[in-house]
Image 1 (spheres, rainbow, N blue to C red):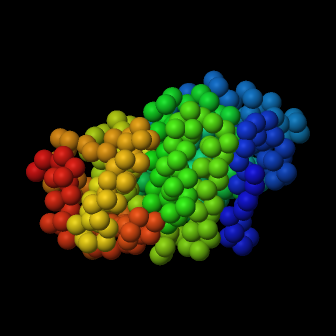
Image 2 (image 1 turned 135 degrees about the vertical axis):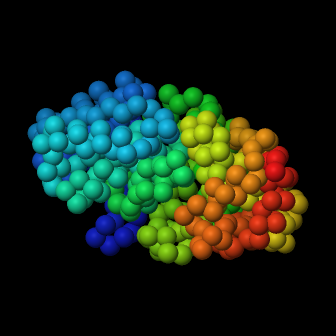
Length: 359
């Protein structure tokens, strides 16, 4: 299936289906690049790099950069490795970067594409469920700092997104569950019927049923594409896509980047966001229970005991959504609708205590 992210001259197609990797070369060559540089990592590369290179006709030079795998490598050093690869390839302003991997590869590749010669084109080829439903769409790029996640970056839209569901067959079950965290988020922030579909098909998705996967991926991407088309640079409604992320980013930072997968932290963050929304009077206990059941059915943790509430709040103050030191959250009003607002610290502490945090 194919649909577009409508951004005027920056519009681009999203392709979803089984076996699309074999058609990638044709899609990239249609962009008339002078050179192609494929960026991948040392986990995905042995699985799919050769197949990706062989999809090209030979009419354009193709080279590759292989990064170390893991969230802890989402830093400036990895960006420098990509830039060095562009130098070796003789890349110019008409060259194209292909990001072959999960969200870390996509974010690093997109950031390198944005700053090489003040911006070149890149193509997203996400190979994890989480990247296929989230980071590959929307143009957010960047790297982490010790102070927080994605604090350095920019908006740089891809030229095309190619999501081959066959690449998900090599994912560990934990990675599939992590992708479900972002899928559930999409349903909870604005689409009740999509949320019901995911709740009913969670088992099929975890079993890698291609029909269920394609439907779930398409639903998440369509919702994100609509929101991005309305608010490309997160001046308003796009911020709601961060439902569960203020809690989730703090979890990732305090536990150590890479200890929790992003989707695991988001899943736990959804439950905490639901409890916070209940304390604000926007949803009832039955809604919180529904969110908890959905998260746990996806194979995700619903609580994280033992972290410091004070350290978590300090981490949240550095979140990109904070304003003037005030922590802003995406809250549910009710499940299926969400908004952003400043929340009193006392209520945040109550939710953190409920979630197992210590003071």
